[in-house]
Length: 263
Image 1: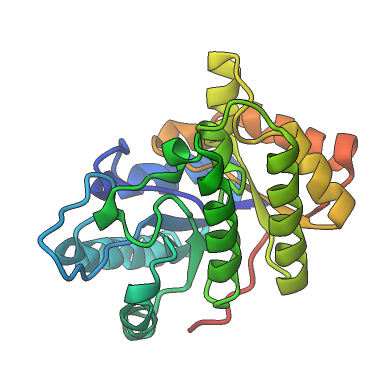
Image 2: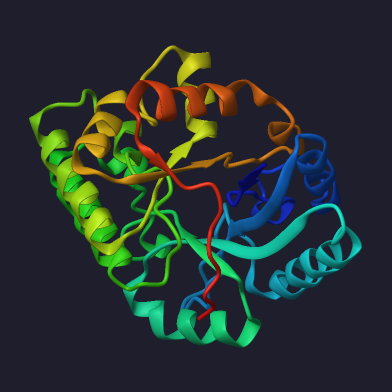
């Protein structure tokens, strides 16, 4: 049995398929638990409109849809209500209240933007500058230290913009991995990134050197489909490759299912 907690919906403007399509695909693929974790809305203090996350006024539709599917398919699969959430310090008080009020099951940490996406500094490109490697690293650690997040998504996102995994990358990889171990937070082996790597013949994320460091440090790993199309869940190719790499090649401890403690 297997679970996936990194699942998007059309509300983020870059995913395909109905919510129910994802549940049906997860059942067909043999998952016993599916967590929806679309990009979290924020109560922005400006008129900024994000191009890659649901609007706040769409959250109730998202929540009710997930809860309805949870009930409809309760005898076939466990469905959880989650979000993929950034670390935006100025909005943390609002976020904490929101998660409690809406009874969200869990959140995962997607560290894409510096401070707030209102500033439009995306780590995937900004990290082509060495100074942003250190900023990305510190943001990862500060976010994990809040205790809010179930795991850290695509921890080596910085390799989307950095030219090669050099000594600087090694240093921040160790810092991220050591913090995750100290805080007992799993690191995600991201399957959307694995597919991107293979199709484009690059090595961005997942990056083999990062995962060798994670093994050395003693981290735990969790596989995340990062599904943006329901069919992503039905293709076992990248999932099976990830299991083989993590279990057989690295021998890193792998987390299959999350525990839900609430907020």
